[in-house]
Image 1 (cartoon, rainbow, N blue to C red):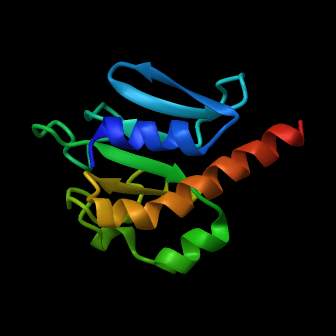
Image 2 (image 1 turned 180 degrees about the horizontal axis):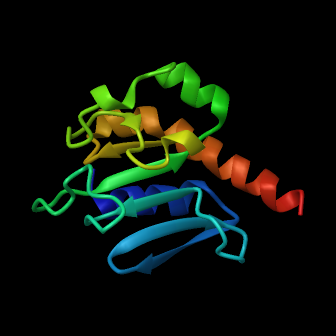
Length: 134
């Protein structure tokens, strides 16, 4: 899967949202306030997050904010110190935002992306619920 494939899937399947590109990273939002994305595609390291070594050629990371129950069902109480955050095509806790129940995958294959699609839908639903409660 490419960044464009993933972006197109999110646009096509999740109405009521939009995306914004900033510094070659893509942020997916529900609603118009751009306060907090429900998913992101990040393409390079920065001073706060370099655990995935995104500065490698053609490497990107898809990040998705899921619910607490989903996160725990996927990873349990996984010790993040044992996670290889540079591994390609492997669903894992986000290297920085795992405590906020974000998951990530570097360069997902079509098979791995199929397992991530319901997580994206959940993240979008959670964002929509947050917007409704305002």
